[in-house]
Structures are given as structure tokens and as C-alpha cells.
Amino acid sequence: MSISIEEVRHVAQLARLDLSDAELMSLQGDLNALIDHFEDIQRVDVTGIGPQSHAVEVQNVWADDLSHPGISRDLALRSSAMTKAGLFIVPQIIEE
Image (cartoon, rainbow, N blue to C red):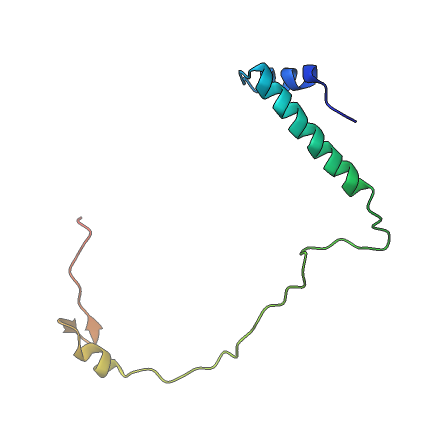
């Protein structure tokens, strides 16, 4: 199967592309080469091959979810400029 120059011209008109004759000929050659590739793919025997979600085997790498002790509240608040009742105090950035 090949695409005629009239079909390429029609599709270009539908896409509102103003192509020169040289561009139409080039596009026709590219589209025909693409169709040839599709025909090659259709000839591949895939009997017995099921659908695949990935081209290669994919496996997640899971790490153990272990808890570790953090720093104490007093140590965290010690480096803050302003604190109140065991909380960080920050400047207001949203106006009312």
C-alpha cells in the first residue's frame, strides 16, 4: 500500500498546511516509508506472546521501613530564633 500525492495534498489541506510541491513529494516519501515499516511489523509472528505492560521486566526495589529516633524537641527548638509553648514562631507571610 502506498499513499498517492493527491492523498498527501488532501491531508495537508485538511491540516491547513501550505506545502510546496517539493515538500509534498518529501512528505509522501516519508509516509510511504512509515507504512512500509508498519507492514514489516505486521509480518512478525507473535503467536504465543501475550500482552506486555513493559518491554523489559520491571521490579520495584523496596527498602525496609525502619524507624529511627529523631532529635528531641528541646534540641530542635534550641536553634530557632523565636519559640512559644514548645512551637516554632515564624513571621506572618499572608495578609488578612
